Picture 1 (cartoon, helix red, strand yellow):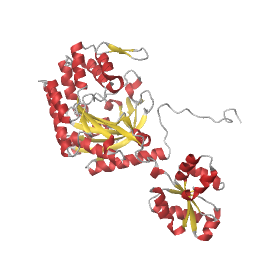
Picture 2: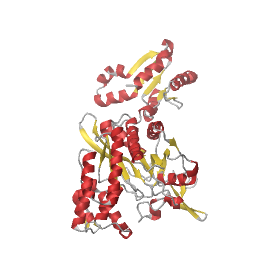
Picture 3: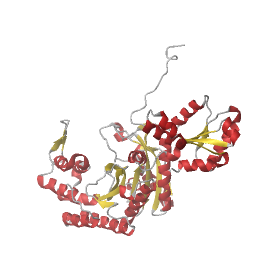
Picture 4: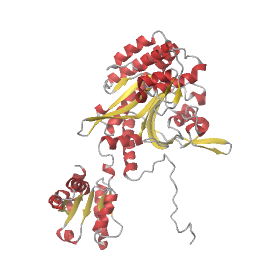
Length: 492
C-alpha cells in the first residue's frame, strides 16, 4: 500500500462556508416553511430562480470592491462571465424584466434559497447562507412598503419572536439625499463622497456619534491605530448630518415633524417625507404601532440600489428568567429599488422588498430562547432489543410517523448502552424500549432522554438521588398507548 493510501486524506473546508446536519438544517427548513405560509396568506406567490446568473445581471451594487470579483464568486463560461447569485433581488429584477408582459401588475413574489458572497468571513458572517425574500414589483404606492413591513412582522412572530421582541426601523434614502444636497453633495461628481457619508452613518451603532462625526469630517483613527479618511465635510455639514441621524422620538409622528423642520424646502427631502407619512398611515391602520415599527434616520442600508424607503428588523429580547435584555441586532432588511429593473428594460419599474436572514434568525432562536429551534427535528428512537422482532419495532415507528412524528428504528449493532449512546448523538427526545419482559406484559418503556439529561446535570454524581428521579424519566405504558404517550412527552 502506498503512503498516501495508508493515510486518511482530508480536505480543508473553505472558510466561511457552514456545513449543516440534521437539526440545524431542519430548523432552517421550519423557519422558511413558517415564513412562507405567512407570505402566501398575504397573497405572495413563490418563485424559484437559478443559483447562477450572468455577472452583468448582478449590477454594480456589490460591496468589497477591493476584493476579487467585487464580492461575488465568478467563473468564465465560454465568452461570458457567470456568478453565483449575491442575493435574491437581482435575479428577481432579471426575471421581472424578461417576463414583464406575462406577469400581473403589481407582481408579488416570495423566494428562499442560498446566496453566496465573496467577502471576508467572521463571527456570524458566512460566504454562503439562506435568505427568504418577499417583494412587490410594479407599485410606487408607499402602502406596498407598509404591507411588506407588516407582513414581515407577522412572519417573525410566526417563528416564535414575541411581539415585544422586535422593532422595524424605517427611513428614506430620499430624505437622506435631501440632507446631502443641503451640504453640497447633490451633483453626480459627489457620488463617491455620498458613499463615504452613508458608510459612516451605517456605523453609528458601532462607533457612536463622535466616531461618525469624525468619519464625516477629516477621518477617524480606530483603536488599532488605523486611520480611515473621512468625507471631508465642513463643520456645518457634519453637524447637519449628525442632527439628521440622531433625530429620534418615541413616535413616528414626532420624528416626521422633526424631519420636516430639518428638510425645509428641499424637493427630494419633501418627497421622502411624503413617502414615510404614507407608510406610517398604513402601518397605523394595520395595527403596527410605534413600539413595533419606528422611523429611524440612522438606517441607510448598505446596497446602493435603494432609491426610497429602507427598513431593518432588529431583535431585542429578555433572555429567560434573568431579566437581561439582549440586543441581537438585525435579522433582515430591505427597501425600495425603483431603478434596478430599468438596467434591463430601460424603463423605470417601481419595486420594494424585504429579506430575512434565515441562518441568523435560527441562531437567534437558539441564543435568545425563542422556543426550541430543534425540538420538532429531534427523532424518536425505537431500540432494537431483539433482531428477530424487527417487524414489531418498525410497526411502532410507523405508527409514530403516521401521527406526524419523526421516528426511526435503530439498525446498528450493540446492546442497549450502544443504542442509547446513538440516540444521544441523534439528539433524540424519546427512546422506546420493548425487550422480552415488556413484550410478555404487553407494554413498552419510554425514556425521556432530554429530561434525563437535565436531571443528571443537576444531580451530578448523586446516584441515589438520580435513582429516585428515574420514575420521572422512564415509564411503562401499554403498547396500544405508545403514540399518545410519546406525543405527551414531546408536548412538555
